[in-house]
Length: 465
Image (tube, rainbow, N blue to C red; front, side, top):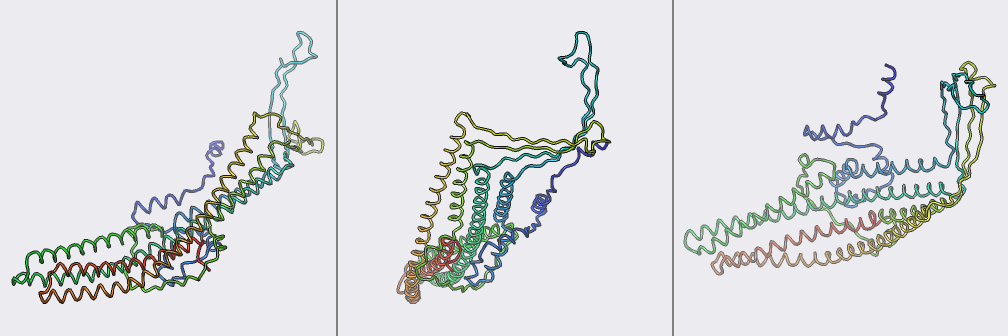
């Protein structure tokens, strides 16, 4: 019974989180899971760059995403694994000490070999009891830096995972800001199209009345109806577009799409001022640059690890304890035993294995340095793209304001001419569509300004401060 209980023991932890997730989606009552250790790690390593927009709603969404987004928790868990790997690598620098108590009972064969045995004589059968309390240790002296370089590589890998976690944080938080801005810009367009729908509806009522009394042809009426239905269809497209962005935002915040809704509100957030001439040394903060730099350092340290395999290794072994045939004398001074030894291992021939390992390590180092160079070049491109686009959108915004004024004036004059019977409705439709497009483009330009401000922040590794 006791043996059965011992075999039933298990150190497998309770799988409570997996059960919680399963129960949440099966019951339809989703619970936000926050891991306090993740929050502590994030708070000490990341800057809340989104506060430059001074939008309380965005601030609250970012806080939810940082605490509940699964990708961020995944990155924190990978960082914890890398931290533990440093300890694992460092353990090779210390001796391994084991306490191996044992009890054996052994019967020697009567027919066992014996060089002093005469023909026909049989040795007596012997039963031997052995009780042993040894303290064993072994230790490889790190003569050539094999284990020291391995620890160095583990530390650089940890630093790369730390940068990777910051990269995930930056990516998630910029995505949250992007979809939030996209929703707000879409709301601006929806407001524009709501007013346009009301105008088209009024036009339709007027046109139907004029057609009823015979002042216009069926062509004018059909054009008015077609114009109203076209704007209505585009309005539904915007609503669908907003819903899709809202669902994406819900996922980023670690929430199911059905339980998340972002109410419409007046949105008059001003663009933050970007300083003239962003210094290039800000790029050093980019998580992807830091990550690739640390990966290159880790790959370089790994070369030293594999080079050490071509040289001799010295291993010290020892044992101390007690050994007795009877448990009553196991702790007596006469039962003590000890052993000391050293082993020198020389790699004379391994079929070129060590040389191949070194070549592979050098190739991996070249891969990481090439990737590092590519990331640096990409960062310069992304910053320049964002700065140039922002400058162009600023000029375009000024021009678009002028276009809106002239197009709205033209549309108003066309409606007046149409009400007097001077022109057909075709002219009204064209001019009102031009005015509507001008307003929609202006909203899109405003959205682009916010979007590329976010892209610039991401390209600089989080703000330009």
